[in-house]
Length: 328
Ligand code: G3P
Ligand code: CA
Image (tube, rainbow, N blue to C red):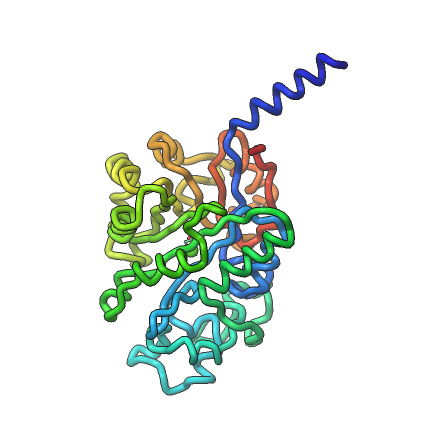
């Protein structure tokens, strides 16, 4: 009996040195409530997410707002409240509004602006604009408050959206973004904080100007998305990954770039090992019920990602599905 206990303790000590698997709530619990709202964040926290993600864009007066798009028209009632404020392309840009005006808007489930239909029809009903937008400071304060009452620490995962667009529109987003994080206490080390961006030059600038202690994640997209002027095909090569390792701590990239369903079994693609060979943290995005490979369940996907040969964590719209996480 005593020997069994000693063996058990030995196993526990051994697994303690293994890294954990982080469940990163993508825009909060966005599978259940409209993305980037306080209620979505609270639900993710209640589900025990390890990190809660904030995408960040800016108002005309330089306020960091928690929102995925640089436009307001895909997730808010801006077209009804400010019908005359679209640009020539018909879109309503956050940078054309003050924070005081943004306070008048309400957020809802993501919809297609062409016809008002839901992007994800089985989620919170579209056309209901029930929730206010949050500043980045408010989003972080909410997490800190929930951590205080729950007695635990939740990580932050802010993403600076489209820095090149903001520079082209007369606003330097980097000092605004970093100042908002600093003012919210996000850089004091009380909770983990990964800073992410699709633009390599912006991450290099943050590394140079704000220090080696920050945890930086290079997001790799598809060139067709035009998220930045970077060449993501080049980033996925051995040379590209080595370059990323010189200024960033990890990579976030589409799940399909590292996982495939081969003959009915989830299988790693070679890029996964290439990234891990560089010592980079790997956080793929995004696990969604709606976009799982044919025949694969949420439980199976999460268990695969969190398995012994898995990745360090994953962005998910459904943070209640945790897989079988490796112990911390
Ligand atoms: O930041 C990880 C993932 O969220 C990147 O994609 O477009 O959802 O911000 P996106
Ligand atoms: Ca994001």
